[in-house]
Amino acid sequence: MMADSELVKSLVALGGVPLILGLVQLFKPFVSDTRYYPLLAVAMGLVINLVASWALGVSAMSDWVAALFNGIIAGMAASGLYSTGSTLQEGSLADKKNRSNGGELDETK
Image 1 (cartoon, rainbow, N blue to C red):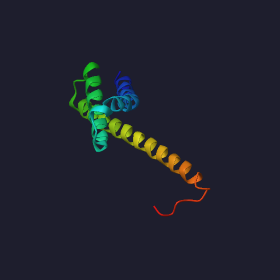
Image 2 (image 1 turned 45 degrees about the vertical axis):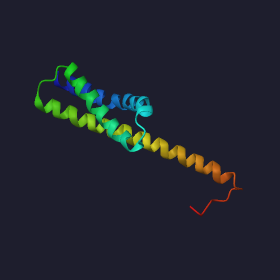
Image 3 (image 1 turned 135 degrees about the vertical axis):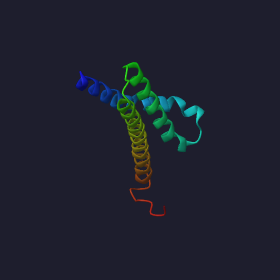
Image 4 (image 1 turned 120 degrees about the vertical axis):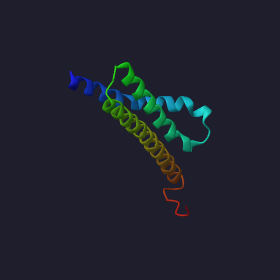
């Protein structure tokens, strides 16, 4: 039964990443400073994993510590996934802009 519990906790942690991404998107109108998005993602990861652990009936201290670390990791993964997507989007926009200049790269930046 212990292996099943570990599997469920891992799936909750990994499955929480897209949920965290969506929740951060929902909170964007209320948080104007983009520097707080990663902190918001980590906080949501912690809350989701702690609530899931509570709902699964976790009682051992080591399981709560694992839930904390899983929450932090899920929040950081969601934050990194978002920033990677933003960087890729900004890069493709810059490529389109450079192509419209006759294909020459703008070296002044």
